[in-house]
Length: 329
Image (tube, rainbow, N blue to C red; front, top):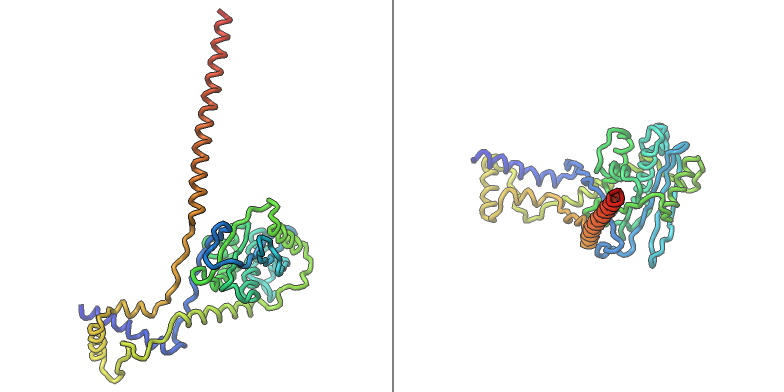
């Protein structure tokens, strides 16, 4: 029992040394999580005018991708910026995101990746104002956020997941909005047209200027800064201040005595150095539950109507057969 306590205390004692020496603190990337849905009827508290990023891809021709950012004022969408281009498959191209072939899937993924880079480095206040990714491809959003685990396009997917890692949905107001394709939704149709321009090789006058390697380096710096912000140094009056001149046995005894005096456990000390994240949002709101109940009621009514209709039809056939038999007799 005593040796087990000593091992636990050695782990706890090693924490302040790592915290005091930032160079020895390992980089802990933000966990990848899927997008919580955005509901126009019941928007999240405090989010009144988020950015909307629509993106789309095309597998025709060269393979094309396009995206556009919008803001909504009094129910009307206003376009802020847009961009399009072909799917870059040349690994030597400095703007390549990792695509190796031009297909509909790589086009959708490339569009999502370019939209992420635009949001991260061109929309300065997305972390407070809010950000809604609008998409018609569940493959791109699933693979790019880590919800899906496909076995193809892994280089491209890993690049996008690396960029996505700074969009912490538990810390920032980031949401997703699934848009059904080919239903004449204006913004979705617009980015669909941008993707076609990219597939045709039409030049974009405001294409991305920063090469992919520099973008990923900036993403890495953001992740490192977030990691340091979540690991504060212990206060001056911390219980973990131990006299380094003492022997190992005396250090364990002194530390254990301090914990007993303060009525703390080793677990309390260790947990005090872990990142504190906000609780995840609930994925189903009250409006969604109401709609589910309405759908269930409608389904039951349809069953009842179908049953009555078939019953009447069956009775009608039986009466006709009785009339024919009576006439024959």
